[in-house]
Length: 122
Image (cartoon, rainbow, N blue to C red; front, side, top):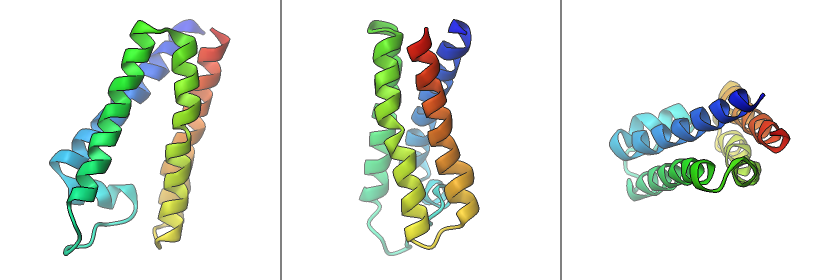
C-alpha cells in the first residue's frame, strides 16, 4: 500500500503542476478544458493567476512529500481536495457541462481524497 500511496501522491502533484503550466502557456485552451471557456475580451491575468496557483500547489505537494513525509502530504491533499470540489461548483454555476463538472472535477476530488486516505494509512 505504501508504494501505491506515494505513487498516487506524486502523480497527482505532477498533474496539478502540469495544469498550472498549461494555464500559463496555453491559457485559453486550458480554460476550455477546465469546463468554462474564457471570454475573448476577458482579462488573461486571471488565467495566469490560476496557472501560478496550480503550479505552486503541485510543487508544494511534492516538497511536502519529500521533506515532511506522508502524513503532511495527506493533510495537504485533504485540504487541496476543496479545489476540485469548488471547480465542480464553478463549472455548474457558469453553464459548463455536467459531464465535465462531475467527470473531471468531482472525480478528481474523489481521487485526491482516496490518495489522502492511503497516505494516512501508511
